[in-house]
Length: 135
Image (tube, rainbow, N blue to C red; front, top):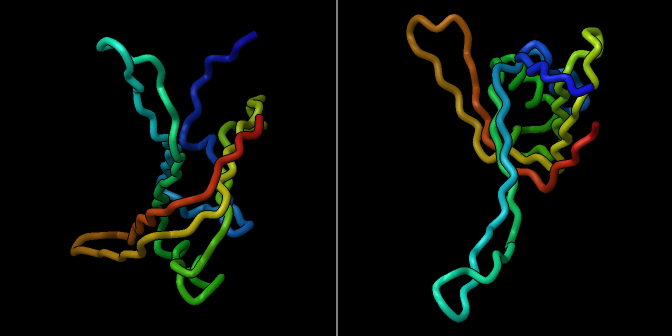
C-alpha cells in the first residue's frame, strides 16, 4: 500500500564529514541537464537531445557547525566531502530514502551578523560530482 505521508523537517538527517550535523538550518541541491530541441524539416522538433549534467546546492548551518567543518582542513574551501541526506524516521515506521552527494566542494564562505541577531547562520553554496539515491 502506498504511504502518502509527507516528510517534515524533523524527519531529515544530514551527515557531512562522517558526522550527524545537528546545527543544520537548511539544505538544497539540484541536478540539471542541458536539453535542446532538434529541428529538421518543418517547424516541429524532431527530438530532444541531452547534454552535460551539473550538480549544485547550498547548506545553511549554525556558525558552530562551520567551525567544526573548518577543523577538518585549513578552510572549508579546501574540503572535498560527501553529504548524505536521509529522509524519513524509521522510529515512525518510515522507510528512509537517502540521497548521497558525492565530491562536494564549497564555492563560497561568508559570515554575517547584525544587531539583534541571537545566532549566526551561514549559507555555504557548493558543487558536487554526482548523486546516488538509496531506497
